[in-house]
Length: 205
Image (cartoon, rainbow, N blue to C red; front, side, top):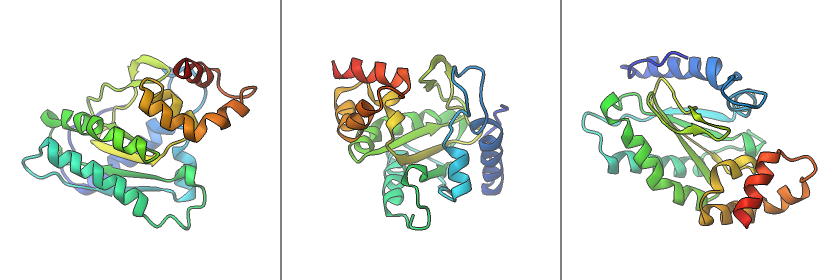
């Protein structure tokens, strides 16, 4: 995957995101020790028309309060969106690109993500940040920075069974996860991913 400099136009940013989804997110990577795409839900979401991509511009002087507020607004937009024609809630995702966020301010996206994650999890939502220098590692290979993208962006979706991968480390996050998916995971012990079960059991204590 080639990481480009910050896109200068909305049209270019959308082209780069589409290319990134096709050539990276929807394909397997040798660094991730499981079969299937980097994100196995994106291609089905695209086929179902359940992945929406929008653009927000941060302007010439982006700040942490501004980027944080943008992400909070994305949470609101996700929940207010008319998803009626997209029948599978698990495939609904809202991606918002920030194509004019300068290369020397990319860490604002990481900081804003951290500031909003508690709120998102409490609402049963998951947020992910992606940019050219994102250090967020793969849950299955901590040496692989999986969240690199050619354009800064954030994605919001509903919490899902596999999110124990991302929510086991903190008691409050895990409590929200377990209240929603604990029973389902317990019932699926014979067929569930062993990593899910190991993290779940460890977090539960």
